[in-house]
Length: 448
Image (tube, rainbow, N blue to C red; front, side):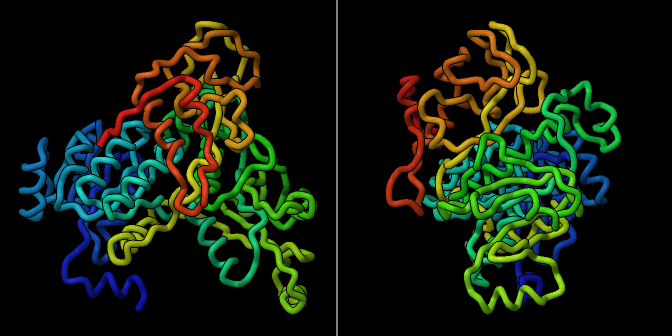
């Protein structure tokens, strides 16, 4: 029976709540509304008007609520509950699956933690919160017996589907990759305004897409789920015209000589918006078969598999259904924090200058392996906001933890160090950096 057929046969719909009604969140509400067996029962946004506008756009009977009891009565009465505070949604036992699609990193994690403690399955469309705190959120979800998963439809989960198919067919993973159209490491929220306005995007958010920070976050999330690494800080990102030119750009024999697969991306390749994976097989019959098949998948023993699109919210409801019906996750940080995205200066920065986060004027982010980051750990780009530099930093120089004046009691850092300490369930030993926490002597309390 297909997933769609199973959803059609449900006697009771899956109650879904969505936090964060931006362009993605609005699409998630729409998709939940039109998917059989799934019902959006509550939405929230810190800008309440956006949530109200979404409900009115869909012509759904709604009521604005401000407490859990009001929300529960609203759901029981068959109306869509509209709220400003995401924690109210995360506190309701009437909600089966909570989708976190805000762009608030720490608050997004808190929403997930609250939902987990309430008994809700968690679907994360907030990849920054997943990168920074995912291992800890997964640990808490496992303890509570609920599902924690990244949302379907974005590049990491779409790539994971490719990788799963390759594995089933007997190919070893060599490279999991993204296809990016354009990059400018030094763009900022002002320079990007014309392009951002064309797409109706927040200027800072669009800047994070263009400077490569968002790409690195997505690929780090994938690496942490599949036990992958990056060959160099920031990945290679070779520029090619077509995805079929990839074998001219990469030396896969060299990349795979240690049998350790990597994440990477190609720049400017057609088809735009796609994802790819490189598989390896020594099987002569498979090589013979692929040699005469029409697709030009490669000369062997390395082969190209790609998908020419990812569809965001349109694909997202599959993982909602699978979490509720099967207790399964599409993508989760099973290997702990193998990689992270660290801040590098976009320009010469002065001592005393405050960093302004991902997509800002001060820094861009590059993915790095944490195993290569032990001596003088960098500051994650997702934490590099509102903190001042202790020294001047040259353009393109990495900004380290010791270079910034951060508050050791800041909940963002406390939860980050807890995530670093989580033991991956797929590893026999702790292969994570906990030296960061020891170095700054942080004592972290359990937030639950």
